[in-house]
Image (cartoon, rainbow, N blue to C red; front, side):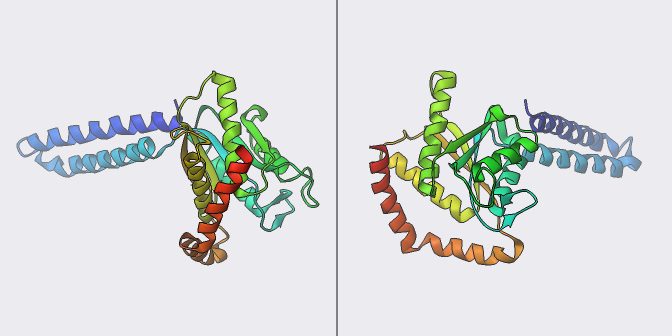
Length: 253
């Protein structure tokens, strides 16, 4: 059981107990403990605080089978030997490590290739970053061949599905997968996943899709949000959606 779950259960019990105690004493307080009514109101407030904390911990926590980190771009960060987007996504994925279940793992989605700035390529740099921050190699999988968003979705989901079948002999449906990226990029992931289901490449219910959002630097955030809003209704999205159907038919038969 996750430590967040244990803390959530403790907060729930503590909150209910404090509210019950304060309500009980409030009833008798007018006769016996009238001078202490203020103290009991503090207990009730504290009880509601504990209940709020328990709701955040128990209802807000996700339990994921895999967190997918697609390779990105942006400025090169020489200190970490990574591109900005790669580092931002890996860092955010690590912050959400507690969302993984006991057998959960990280997937690095992107082609393994040499890069003039990154030793071993972007997928390897993300892999090394995760290892440096305490993730065991057995809990990291590299997809290895996708070069664009559509391929990130198709190849990654295929690889996750194959791993699930190898390990358990069947699919424990749904497989709960979260992609890490900026919001506009995540919309495209969702588009391609829906298209793959519509075309019958995956069964509806094979996967449960989650989003872990990253954001650009503060100065770029406003412009990025405008780009996302424009993309929602743009002909580009409609055209990419149509092209995706054709390419997926070719890629997956």
